[in-house]
Image (cartoon, rainbow, N blue to C red; front, side, top):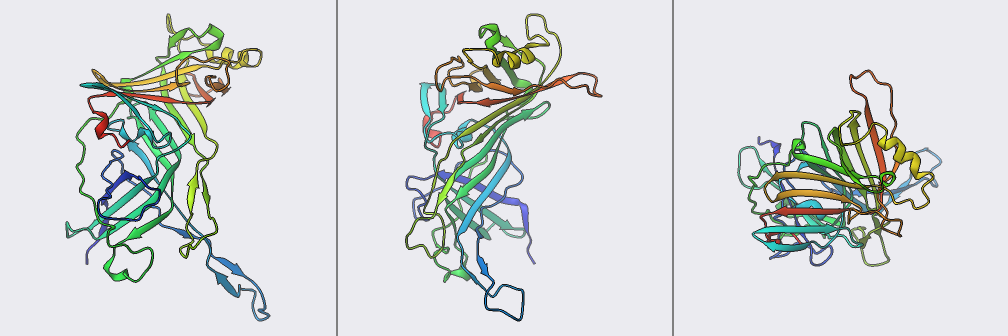
Length: 365
């Protein structure tokens, strides 16, 4: 007997040139998300439709018809070792610049990259792949960038929606169209770089009530930036025996940014009332600019990941250029020694700037 163990999985992705392309020679998926321990694979759910009719002898359904398939999975709590997967919930384009030290600019855009995901598991007593799955036509529906005190910068791919899976199990060659002999394992190289630690982070903020003067916030305890693309799978009229989506469209994108700070007076820094006053000021501010937010993680010289809200870090009242709008920042009586303020914002857009020694040619896009 040979067991299939959780730690013997390999999981990687590739960017598709053609949406939902079936496995074929020359197609690869060798990009890595980072370090993670669990994932939910996108094996299909079928919405079979039962009908209760002409069955006087029973209250059970009489007959079921084949319904449509839905494929979605997740890869939570990925420890980021570089900036390469950051674009997946945001865009299909990264702008690369520089030489020796490179800057990679990730601005959100209407279109997302579609990806193929390859999952391989090895039986306990062998180094020969035992289970291989290809998932094609994938787009990230929901994702979260997050970090908390004592931890590391992570990205959770909370939901990735796919068109369909393929496999190459020799016992199932007659299962069409799911079987494909080209759905093979990938040759992967594990990364050796360090994570981005919370202790290497910094938060700066520009509040409208202070005329957008930049202040540092040193008492940050955690931060989360959530993205929801509201993807919409379409099942158009067509020959489609497998009942999978014809394509997946991007919907209205929504951002939420939240973080927690300890209430500590810092000379030359934030004041205890800053976030409360900004929250109240939004209700009377006729220009309603919102706040600028900048989270930066510095791993070393010329090695940073920076999140900016809005994209140019300079809020204005212009359409599409506002900053983060605080929707709540309660100050509660708590049993802990230091009072904390959880701040939550809606956000119009985001830019991620990555500085590293990796040329654009080794990024997925």
